[in-house]
Amino acid sequence: MPPAVRPYLGALRRSAIANPARIGLQKRRLMKSAALSAAERELLRRVSSRIHHRDGMYAGSGEQYFLAGLSALACIDEVLRAASVEEVADFLDMPSGYGRELRFFALRFPRATCTACDIQPGATDFCAREFGARPVVSRPRLGEVSFGRKFDLVWCGSLVTHLDPDSTRELLRLFARHLKPRGVAVFTFHGDHVLRRMRDGGETYELDPAAVPALVSHYEAAPARASSHFKTSMRVTGCSSHAVARQSTGLPGAVFSASSACSRS
Ligand SMILES: C[S@@+](CC[C@H](N)C(=O)[O-])C[C@H]1O[C@@H](n2cnc3c(N)ncnc32)[C@H](O)[C@@H]1O
Image 1: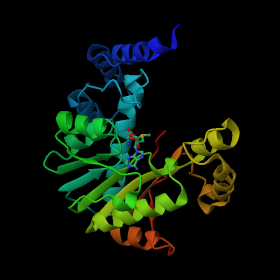
Image 2: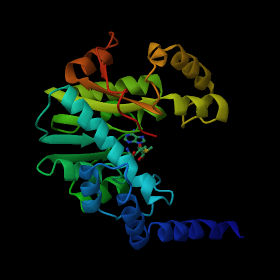
Image 3: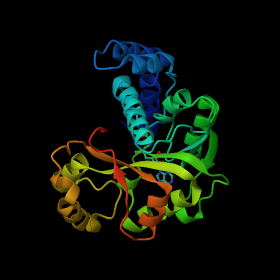
């Protein structure tokens, strides 16, 4: 096949698998799953089936796609309960991507102002158009990002996994600057699944390959791994704004972990 034709065929394939009728069918199949609670089934019934053809999080399985959103919401609800946060008036989803999770948050917090932040302008535009989010385009240097408002809740799904330690600190500082006094940030980071892929599968998650061995040994030495309930493929942690501020300044962070109940792949 001539190389020049490949991108067009790729776009055609992506458009075909992101067909709303096909995705709607996949969604209805998932709704029959006995593993879902009644509340999750209702959210699923109402959630949009529109997936952007450039959304890299959709590889053809609507079931996986929607389950990821429901799992994010379960993590958030667990952390909000633990932190006794009852009202969410302003929330941030960063990185929003094309709204795989944000579409559920918009249903769960219908009166809240939702900000979608990603480095891809097309992704934040889609979130604004489809889910009523306020779009903010991020920067490679996270210290340069500003939202002009503070949040009760920040969800950060699958960004830390791709960041080096300095950028991760920058991200935590960014959240600390933008959380209301009783606000919480919930974020996912490396877990056993990521570790195995890095250690045994050569996966780098866009990090400097030279930095991977140190990251793996650091993770393997972390005390959380000793925990018997640590079965998740990504750990999910919620922090109070105070804890985030302490974490980002390099002091021992008093984060509370929701890893026992939350799972996410
Ligand atoms: C693995 S995806 C996760 C997206 C979404 N949370 C989800 O689970 O569907 C990672 C996202 O991070 C975004 N990203 C990468 N660097 C970023 C940055 N500096 N600021 C904001 N978003 C970034 C990418 O564009 C991509 O959409």
